[in-house]
Image (cartoon, rainbow, N blue to C red):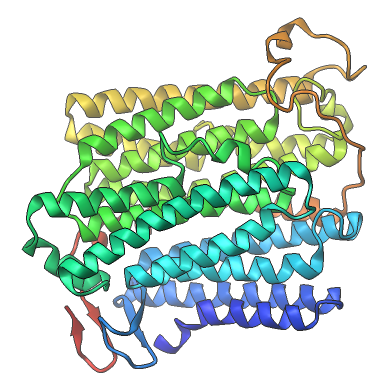
Length: 517
């Protein structure tokens, strides 16, 4: 079974090479990309079942033992996130195929998009299964290179500008991460996560705290945690719809995943939970207030993305097995729902020629299917019962209430208020864009006059045809969001086992029977 682990990274990289060779053959590129992601999904599902029934799998790449060799590590958390990510990447790929067939190469040039997309996938999967910090850093850098290509597709002025901001911020995060890796190696003589966890107690608490804060700062930038979340709302909305959907659903979660490993395994004895609780509350409140002030659907969703990262940091800061399990479930929920919403907004943009709630009207009558595809994930993200958003938040609130400190109570109240404001922002957009009577797009409306100066409130483009495959891809993702609710019992049970497992010491066992540490 261990032979399958390297394929999670090798297959996307091999697929990217093949798509580059067939750069002028769109059909071959699409077939290779779809096949690659399908194979990764199958392998991830097999590995998830295996590690859930037995034990985590560790592989020494090239036979080099730690701390000199690269270790790939698959436990329940890594396998689950690879599976969810590959499914999401596959659905967004289908959406992009439809967009490319309708628009040609203007928005998503296929010869560039497919290899970059597979390299992005390889970076995501590598980050999830990295068993050492330096390999995790390599995964982040693969992500950075591929995401910069994808975010600037089309080479418009706005995309180049926001892409430059995105890469500068990412490079700052990478520098902090690399500095932390160098300091950890200098202090402990290893970058293997299991060995770091075993040896961290040998260091003084103040040294541990410095290393801890460095890693949290680096990962916090990538996860868009307040106060280093300023880059996200301006960077994501300018990219093509498929790219925005992938970025919103997956890239910040890689940073959250790294925070989970940091908090539960590397620095379990060096707690900064109070700081994380304060940061979580600020991230939730600032993000959702930003969403309320927006008049453009992509920017609304980008700010809600920031606010809901706060829930994940909240769960990490509670630091109990129940809270970690609820956090993992919420991560899975958010990956799927946030991606679905951005795909639905992509349909709105094509149908109405705009994503501005100041300008768009009458979509309920004009496009009732799009209205449903937006409404279902919107109320899910807002946390209405019985959907997965409600289940995840209730799990977090119950874990916080079990701790019962005054700060936990404040966070529960902040989480409830954030959820209500999220629902308000999304349903206000629903009311204005879908329920308002259709008419002159320039007609003034006193109800939204205060949004007239909001960013991108006056954009208007040509309305474009919506290929069936784009609607099917979005509908498929809506079905996955509903599946998270229908099958919430077994999925949440798996997440609870993940939470319990992450509180246990990490011991990597190889086929030879030798363990690390």
